[in-house]
Length: 138
Image 1: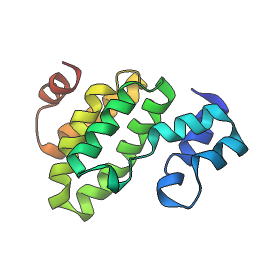
Image 2 (image 1 turned 135 degrees about the vertical axis):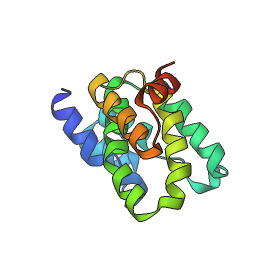
Image 3 (image 1 turned 90 degrees about the horizontal axis):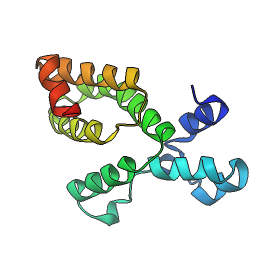
């Protein structure tokens, strides 16, 4: 769908959060487009504010991101959700609320993956698919 750029961004999307690698290093090795995409997918540091503020910052940043970035984020959500539901059901309640709010702004993401994420949200919250879709899509 997004060619080599899609593969590279997908592989690097958590690198800055999980390793000592910086956006500048990614820019040096992979170029500005890849670095900008990874930067858009990188959560703000804890010092940026409480969780609610940081998640709002993420939503605002991703709302303005390109289709590749939004699609990688949706794929990441689809990948992470089953594990969170299984291993941390208490946290999953907050996580699913945050993901519902995030999906509302990921309007440029691949429509098939976005629909899959909405279905996952409906299943995880034991709510009708149509209700979840209305909340996300409007």
